[in-house]
Image 1 (cartoon, rainbow, N blue to C red):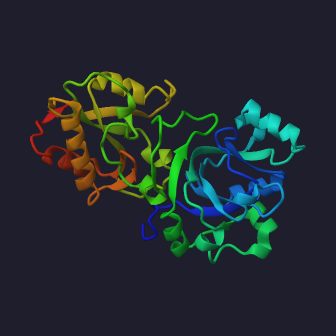
Image 2: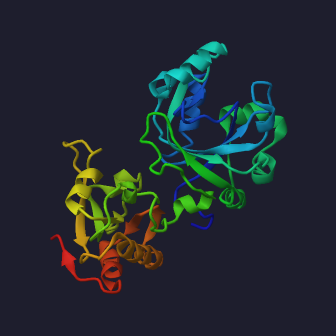
Image 3: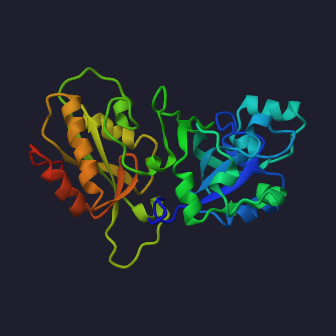
Length: 317
């Protein structure tokens, strides 16, 4: 991960008239052939850095400035499949119906909280004279440009058609921190947004039992025993397991299983301290998938889990 992104992830740039994932949960093209050509350059989870187009349709304060980042899914849809009523009405009012209707879904989004020109970040990939071509085809950032993009301070925002951002007021952080393990503290991303009275709490390790390589769109090499994992804190691990699997169809071949549970900690804060220590120590042995998710050998994760101070060796198996 020399450029600061998880292995396989890329960032492309694209101009548009604004940034409104809360109402428009998609990226669109006016021609299906242009959308399909763009799709062939992407993989699930890749990122698009949106900047304001230098046209009259864009607010003057946003022209040529970085507006935000979108995490996409490589699947062809129509704009109405993932647009709010407000978003479609806005297109009607502005005479834009039929434009950008060939789309791909957005899964997560981050709005830039800094006023930075696209030329300051994509100083090789961006060319002002290629505005229309970049709007349609985009350009991929090189490693030096990605390093600059990851420094931009952003705030995660809701995406129409996706679960809402888990915190009432998401934090402003450098974009690169999105792909690092989150610190454990009240109100951070993860199950700690579920409110419950303080009391005994547990640290747990959950493993995706199924084809984790397919889940993350990774090629499985011979002998590769890596799995997707999640570290977390809960006062009711049975309830938490049900929550983790709530969005997975019953007929699916994969599901989350909680394989390790700590001894009860006296309160949530103590459990979260232990969780934070796991995240810190795991970075040298496991690959971070962002927030509380990791990738690697289960034996390595178990070793880190049981090395935490005061951890009793309870197992669900």
